[in-house]
Image (cartoon, rainbow, N blue to C red; front, side):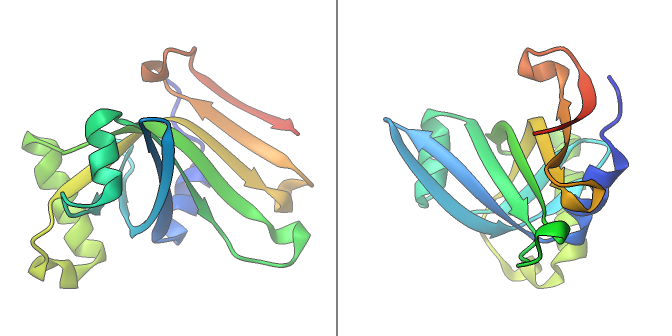
Length: 155
């Protein structure tokens, strides 16, 4: 599998809030959350209470989508990431690494009692208008059922 483009990884690390989209029983829902990211494992990490709507949705349908955006009114500076993936509770070694990464980024979370969750992206689409209007970098991972791709295109 080709590595994820460094520009995508850098953008992910520059930000700390993602929007998560879930869907269960044909009812979509969005939630925002603080996240950490493990490059090597390719997972977003966050905490969320089991009583939330998005967790209830994921227990029915673990396929999720999300986005991370840079807020700007300058068209030439627009950057954003859209992704699809699978959300689940981490276990074993991944749970240890995820907890360490999350607490390193958000030390105050040591007081939280909410469980850790991870999203393993299967598709990433990064828009970066600094590279040209509408410039996209797309990465599909093998687990998405698609051929590995790391291509750039406009549109």
